[in-house]
Image (cartoon, rainbow, N blue to C red; front, side, top):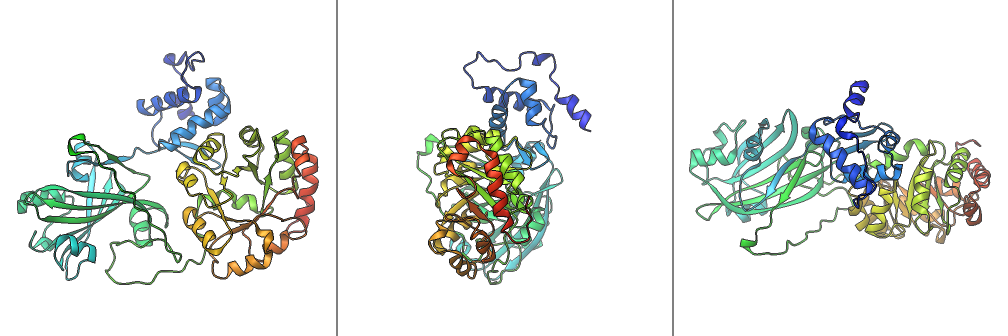
Length: 511
């Protein structure tokens, strides 16, 4: 299989001119365009593994930083995905729903595109009491509820819960809706046609029921499409909630000048401290208590650092005006037992340092002191595998769009909780040295599910105390990497200091 993919991705006669260095178009954009052409031509299909960064750099005679920026752009566009330790793969094409002046259903759109859509009815019945917001829209207390699971080309795409007033479609609970479009059925059997309506979309986590139906991990991001539509007679027709797999769906929005240009209001939803926001799901309409999180949910952060923290739960924070010999610095830390390294963006050559340090095997390299969207994007394009902010800066989470884990900071319980809710990654307690390990222990009581990494004033004399108080890991700065040693690129000095620190930690041995 590997040989087949290599053969399919080898440049052919049309590839004689690989990258035009005289062109005003940036090199990374040219490379991105060439890779897109391979996806569109079918030479690389969904699920195929891309050549490694080094192979692409050699093939197109560009630097690895150019390759990483091109791959980052492709990942941002949803065209590829990366699995740590395995490489980058061509993503499955997303199915597009539309927010347009036409009320066409997704079933009609996808079948018209020649895709095989199947609809399985999960629940179909008359209910005495509709949800309050549905009652208000439909103008009815009771009605019909239909839950359906939709698959495209044999894979789950969405779960849809539809509500209709009883007088709109009498006897609906007895009708056969398997593998049918509800809109087409309503027009054929009841003479009802959808005329207009409103739709909203928001990101929500998958609860256990939705996760099982859609074959995703619990807590995975779903796109909740909520629609309220009217029939041609001007009266309400239906209300539906549709949970779509975020990795298989994209929604397009058309702007129609003829209908007037109006801004779309932003709606902000804050997660509840006791768990993810609730949503109406295809199980019984009963009140149920919110589960209290008892463990950190699986996240990209956990996947990134679990193995690295096995040797020592420490993040080395490097801060200097300039970073000398980043590879030597990373090697010294790794050989001493610390494998997670953060280069703060306050250094003049921070992005170059991140790129060079990533060449060191067995080291996870991130960017620190990230405070703006632009800094976040540049850091990711430069190869940063995680980002750390010195405060709660949620806009950088939006800027990277899930491509890398983001660690936000806080000091009070409220600040730490908000940071965790925004990322579901670790959070940085800063400045931890103000109140010491006892404060961390107090925080762990009400927030046992929030992985806290204290930062500030931590060294070989107290790192073990913070870990004993419940720290997920400790951030250690100048105690491991003094400014003068970092500027010199003195990996030997960092190795010595790291070994001294690691010896003080529980269940570790000197490297």
